[in-house]
Length: 281
Ligand code: PDD
Image (cartoon, rainbow, N blue to C red):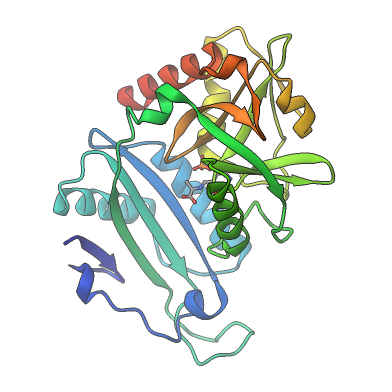
């Protein structure tokens, strides 16, 4: 039984309560972050906190949170749940108010958080690589906000799973936007790393940002541009990044084997560098 966080209190998970009038529940009117815990360290905590502040500001949700308060809450949750490796999920909603589409006048935000155990350092998929299928892009136009309105991603992830894939890469106007819960990358035959530039079309991945920073430790050249499924099928390598997967090699896309069906050197190297940086941080 986990201890979870609800509006300033640490309670047993079966005693945690949120109102049925909560706007997160009624309208998906809220935002979230997922931060991994690697041997007790919160990976990229400041990046996740900054993005949380940005998502809240974009939705004009006035939460009274601070970086240090949220850090201490993460620390408490990890300690109270003996969590050395896994994830911390944090959600902030506009709060509970009688149902009305417009913003309520003076409602307290709802803040909840919980832990999830997960093998983050050495999951099987880091060795074997994962399969991806392309799926249609079904989301709204502000995908840069990490909102809890995730129904499109839920349906698309399920469609991917039903095809035996780990992830769905969403396609809009002929190019891949990103994964249902991760950022998409390919390495071209001439060794260029390609990922989509930031815009309203994609979530600004915190792991993406960290990986792009690490490029200075490699001789890889970056091309930020959209790419097509066909380019991905013909890529020398492909991989995805997220707080929960770090850097995961992709070995098959829509049935096309990538890099001979084995994790490629770029993905393996970037995963190593990412882990080393997280361990040092
Ligand atoms: N998902 N794109 C989408 C649509 C995402 O949902 C995520 C993260 C990412 C990667 O972002 P980051 O590197 O900051 O985790 C990209 C999280 C892990 C989730 O919903 O569980």
